[in-house]
Image (cartoon, rainbow, N blue to C red; front, side, top):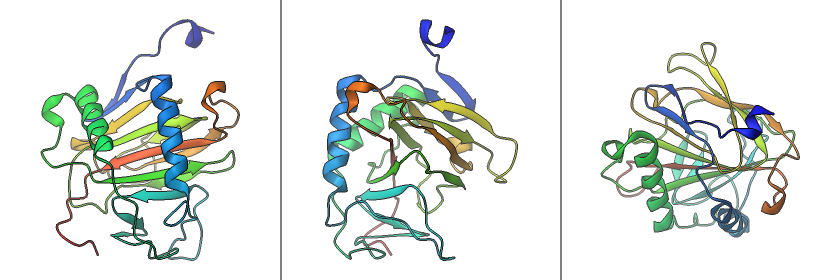
Length: 221
């Protein structure tokens, strides 16, 4: 009950890793959900990601700016319909830069623009194993925005997928930023809590918008 009576505080989980609860206002969340629905439509829409070993990720994904596939970037959906990836809008760069400035301070905002979005959709059974965001050539902070159902977000260390790690609850509207010494920390989503999305959001499931700086000059691989 206390969690409902008192505001949740921002938390520094590790150097350069900060959780900011309720960062997105309800109207901004609704706007982002509508944008995600547009981005999810084909061509270059929401897809199931297949790993090199023949498995599949349970969270489905759509990309903006550059298309991520295990473990590289391309300008077309090389592991899907082959269509050109959807453009990365300038307003998402502005949102990412505001997020970094708020969470880590203005000095942490990178000089280069954010140019990649990975949008993952989780239904109640979806998970994300421990991994690092290591396919970029930039050490700019990663910005993660949560919409819809609450999840358990596991934030670990830079050396191993195992302990030590910290589990934090991410709710709709929450911001998580990790950069600096934590930029290559392993992280994942071991659990989603179905039916916990704000009733007025009109979303069943969880959306995670991850914003990155590619650091890739010219054409991606």
